Image 1 (spheres, helix red, strand yellow):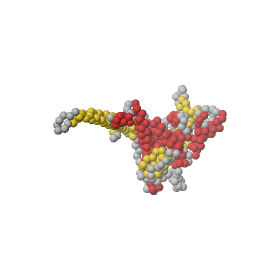
Image 2 (cartoon, helix red, strand yellow):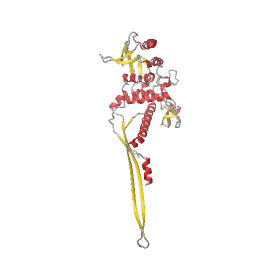
Image 3 (cartoon, rainbow, N blue to C red):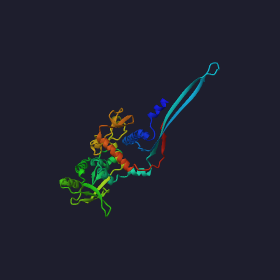
Image 4 (tube, one colour):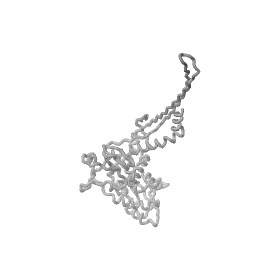
Length: 354
């Protein structure tokens, strides 16, 4: 009975059971989803197929069985009756926990369209205005602005030739970031035409910075509102053409900044991007590459925020690399924004955990 009472005290049920298990399942799900993102980035680096599984549901059944008994035994000598009765107590307890996890593959037409569709321009400005650094959001999500390029070839499998240097794009980002906290550049909707416009609000103390931004974009200095378009092949002084990356294009862009063992390069397992002079191109020199770095090690790294084994190596995000961790967090938000609401049409896999 004492043992049964001890077991009952060690485990909680009902509301207390939720408090004891909710954080554990939350941590496990977040960790597995993050590892999946990291694994798919490495897969793209090696040109291996990607796949996404969503945890559709988690059900856990907890059960506690208690049992007890009282037996009376009468002792006698040579068959004679005796008044010596012995009472025997028995008690038992059994605790069981049966979690069941249901996985849902993210696939089908809707999911493919969501990862291959450009990030909405409104979402880009919403993220930049919600506390995220404009530099981080634009470096990842924007491919071109009025002819100023941000490594457009990085939106697919690793190219053999280096992209054009993105110095002008970085200069533009620096100017935008200089006035980001002032909310001087913001989209708005024309109440009559319902057309999305990009408005430059006047501010005498930042007039020179705004002038430089308009000059780099080739905009009419006398206007305050400009049309927003996605057709980067045409240009007009009253229009800002913005071509955004797709979600898969962002995954590809991040996959180029993965350290690779020299043996894998020599074996032709990855594409090595070359400059015009034949030297190896450094993807860390691109706007997106400066904000994300996936390292490699032959053994499990000690100071890793997140690490996965792949092709006999360990690939990881360093725990003290705050830039990469922030960019990885932004990728998670973009995934939920762009593809998180997609309903799977494929089969669901339910696994009872023992």
